[in-house]
Image 1 (cartoon, rainbow, N blue to C red):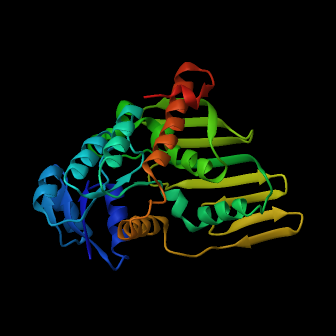
Image 2 (image 1 turned 60 degrees about the vertical axis):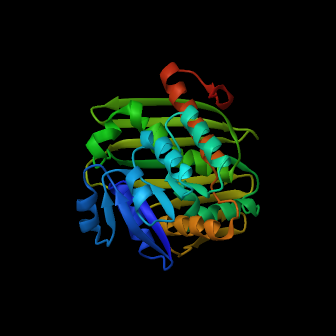
Image 3 (image 1 turned 90 degrees about the horizontal axis):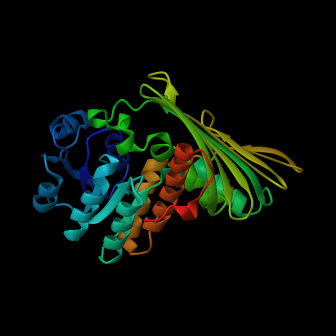
Length: 325
């Protein structure tokens, strides 16, 4: 049984607790959060020891791995503390808020004998994984144009409203659109240029980014914190190639493919993405194989988000290569 020390007590922590509950060989044994660990453990129905300090939890609790679900600015110190103690780490996306912090994480992980994986969860949702497999098998020919949309209400559940501090959260281009930037890189390939625009109001935000891939394909990413409270998440994806089109609407389970041979819709039913990604982390930890999302994968997704932020701020296209530590 792998004993997990969970850092954080917010929305994402609950998603991970729910996922671990479906995994037979893992349990959340300890939770660290400055003010709300006890309340979280009671609400989640866990039998876990609580701590106000993550470092104290790492020193005192009997845990095998750390799961970092705390706000983005804490990722570097939490990962560094865990690695210093020889603990394996699963870290929520983004890997960090700055390239300097992300590089520091990759360096400390590379020098240690620990397993480290970043939670770019779209890769593990069955529909998104099915699209990637179909594209890699040539099902729609060479990719040409992609479109991704990810719209939600403002994440008011963040601890002390930290999402509203865009210097900490990065806003939708860093916290939300990074899902699709990573997925597009995984499916289509490297992104070399970004042109983005965003507008903000109160706590809301709407952003659009056009990306150019190294092979000449183009993509369009829309991200928003503009939906009304309790509306939920809207997301969709479509990718056109020279032999067809594949699309997925988040409100429907089916992946639809349109080619000269006709239209096909299939629903790849499986465990949800959060469970699948944590199972992948635990399997990599067991085998010692490289995790399916590496630190370098996460750094490259972060660079695209940072390029988008720079583009929106400066009103010009930004080459991803311009984003350097």
